[in-house]
Image (cartoon, rainbow, N blue to C red; front, top):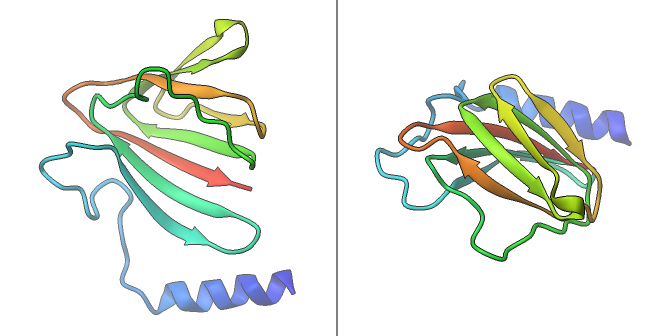
Length: 122
């Protein structure tokens, strides 16, 4: 069943035009963080997230049901974890896996330029 789903996904992707994660669909103005689902099925969801100085709202913490693999493709960011106030600074190429229910928030992203994330929820 998983192989069939992958083959169907692959065939569907070939029928769509080529896109570029760094350029496709980036608006000039970005009043809010841009979250775009690139692919999903029952087992996983892949998102492109674009920030320009955005951060989590005050007092807001992500507490997700799924594991999250997050890769910073471009820019700089800082993630704060609720437990013991641990923070992690990320630069292009850095990634981490956040287990389910590990409360975290985006403290900071580079102002004035795009910070592009690839997030995989599984």
